[in-house]
Image (cartoon, rainbow, N blue to C red):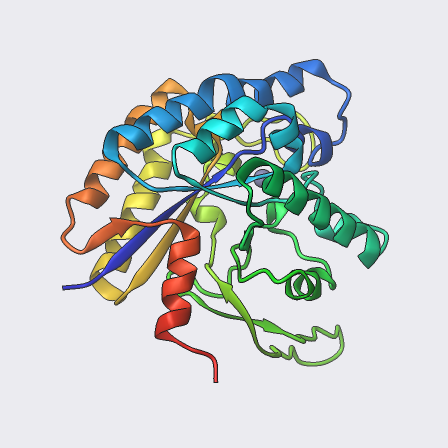
Length: 282
Ligand SMILES: [Zn+2]
């Protein structure tokens, strides 16, 4: 019998995603979509996870923690993991210097420490963007795992550093570091297909829910059948998945996972730690 692990990675961006990811931040109607995530989506998700007793991981920008402290406190109080997702939601590659990028990460650590009393062990990059400095910063600040990279789909691994991608020569993949990677995919993320924007970088939305959920079923079922000890990271945004017509489908998906012998929901921290224990670095 296979063991299959499902990590629900809740990116609680709230308003922050509308400040840095799009081409105008001073627009209250956009902000309201993030407020919906905090006021409506997040409580619904917490209720659903509580009903099924499912541990999850909330990757929360410091901006969200300081803007919506009560609901972030609820996340922590209900026993879910709280991990790093930037203080701002600004893409790491957009900073002018390593120092500026590192200052944002350090500020995010402090926000989480203020909320939970502990520093985060893991990092999910805003918009899954890395700069040339991001991995160094994660190592310097003693992160244990990352979940932003797509070199695998269902197999955790040690994240390579020192890669080179010259335009006029072959790609060099570098060497493994001590950071455990829990791989992600845009194909297991609710935001791009379901969220309509009228500006750069995308205009998606109005995609039939069942088509996207079917991708998630197909990926999970394939992993369950073919990958021993596979890890399925599903990325969810309260302002997106917390809407009624998606919540009913999410609940059905959770029931599907729970119906499979050997499948379980785990936090990302526990999943990374289990990988490290089973695959110790020399
Ligand atoms: Zn995000």
